[in-house]
Image (tube, rainbow, N blue to C red; front, side, top):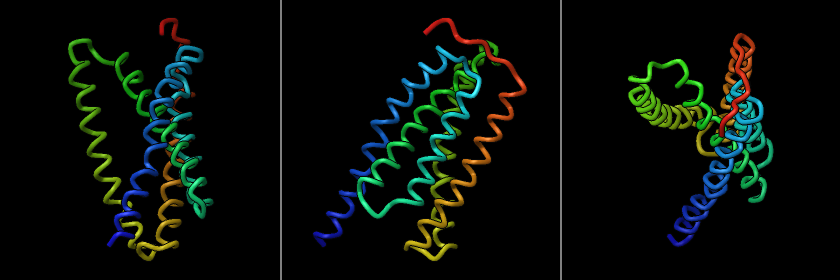
Amino acid sequence: DQLKLYKATATGWVLVPYAVVALAGSWLSQQYRHHFGTRNQLSVGCLLFLIGTMSLALWHDNLWQVLIAMGLGGLGSGFTFSSLPVRMVPHLPSSETASALALNQVLRYVGFALGSAAVITLMDLFGGINEAGFTGTLWVISGLWLVITVSSWALDRRQSSPVATTA
């Protein structure tokens, strides 16, 4: 009983680097936008998520490896999620901005719920809560991140985005 409590607590603490570095990712995303504009901003965030996910699939035998992978995922999270509203707002009538940003938040949480259900399903398909289930699921997620990274990069090639002049 005590061991289960310890494992659950330790698992929760592994999320701390993700959360802390996500804040840094948001700030870095703003700096990126200030220097380079919005072009490839989303792709960079997706690439960071991809690197974090692949790192976790490859190296997870030691706690430090998991913490680094979670930090990379957090960096990707902050970078990606802070870039989305910036990409949306210029294409919206000002009277619809608040509604669109609220819908963005709702869709994020729907995506989190669907993603959680998909991970559970994938782990089950790959053999359950074991090494095969864990790494198999991470490789599928890595493949999705690769597709999303390449897709967002390709879409950015089709449009121009000037460098932002304000912070």
